[in-house]
Amino acid sequence: NWSRNSRNSGLTGLGTVDLRKQEERGELIQPVLFVLLVLVSVLLYFAVSLMDPGFVLSDGSDLQFTLGIAEETQDMIPPTTKSLRQRRCGHCLLQQPMRSKHCQTCQHCVRRYDHHCPWIENCVGERNHRWFVLYLAVQLLVLLWGLHMAWSGFTTAPTWQLWLRGNGVLLGTVAVVAVLSLTVLLLLGSHLYLVSLNTTTWEFMSRHRISYLKHCGSEENPFDRGALRNLWGFFCNWGAIVWEQVYFREGNDPI
Image (cartoon, rainbow, N blue to C red):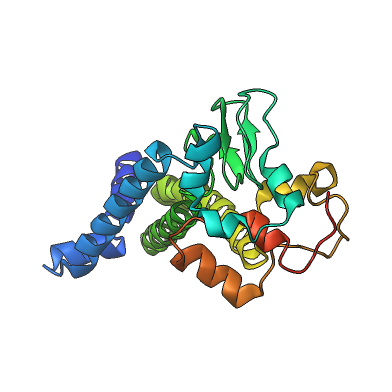
């Protein structure tokens, strides 16, 4: 009888979470919202995983067309900038725009390369970086909501042994979800911090090896336009940016 009561108390704990109680009372707004949030998270995951992160697929005029460089605009770029755009990748032998890097896993150069994420099995670059950050934000909301639901299911018991038997499943769930929540929170915070500085994970970690950054001071970032403008440009500017122009706007020393 005691073991049967313990198992029943465990099932009761699972049945006392907030959403289950609301569902039993016929209050479906929050359960439906939670399911929709999970679906949005799944859709964002597949979108970021399958999206072209900004692969450099062609040379010459195709590259200039993709970057949106008109003929009159090219005349405004210093000669040193043009030579920078002519740098060729040693792996795929294509011309690399500034801030691009060859990914050994994807076997492509990626514009405004941030990192290759094994979580989504894709690179994070110019085209999908904002969606990756949005995915992290939605995923964090789902995890925190799930953590709250699991926490709300804990029940009381007269002894620790009975409490562990009745809440063991929820305790394990809370531990796993808490670790995942902390991981996603740190990822989201670090990406928002780097975005506010207009730098990438690759540039932040390897600036001493990057040709256009290694001559800059430790606190100097030639792409930084101020936190608000950086955030606005990252989330709201859907056009391609010619980073050579941004780099040379204040007369940086040629590389």
